[in-house]
Length: 209
View (tube, helix red, strand yellow):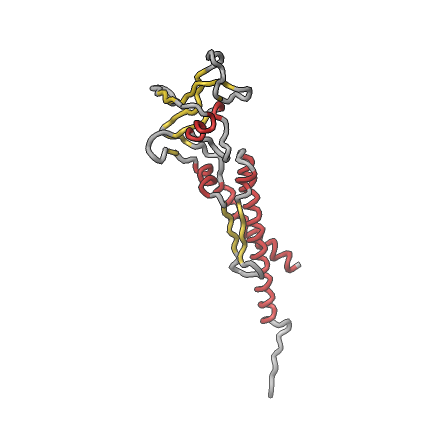
């Protein structure tokens, strides 16, 4: 007697199809989670008033680069990790040389190279000399004698009589400064991680139906 057993549908084919569906679901879920986290971080940064340039430093890479995998992953990071990290943690900043941190006032203006102007650059640009004034209470100062233009910036005076000349605070000097915490990147990262299982299930269901 010869017996033959046929299993319909083919279990091996069904399992292979299910694994393939799982690979597609996991890969799609990780890409969605990564895209959502990148968007959330960029929104946080612009919402904190830190500008679109810093927000655009947030980047995303999905793995694998092509195809699907049950081990798919997404990596979200910043190309400006020091700046973003500082606003995320709110660190205490001290001068590298152990002296003063210089904070420009409105009278100092802005650097021609972008960012904060330094005392050296300010002196070279204006031709004025800064003087140090120590204050026991409150920040010490770097001041200069000149006049204030229509924009409120200190410039050299052309007056021969000294009329209109003022002593303007150009820089505040402090030993350290506490940067306020303006971001909470961990919050969005935790939400993205917590949402991955639901994304996998949703993509798997959509794959089957």
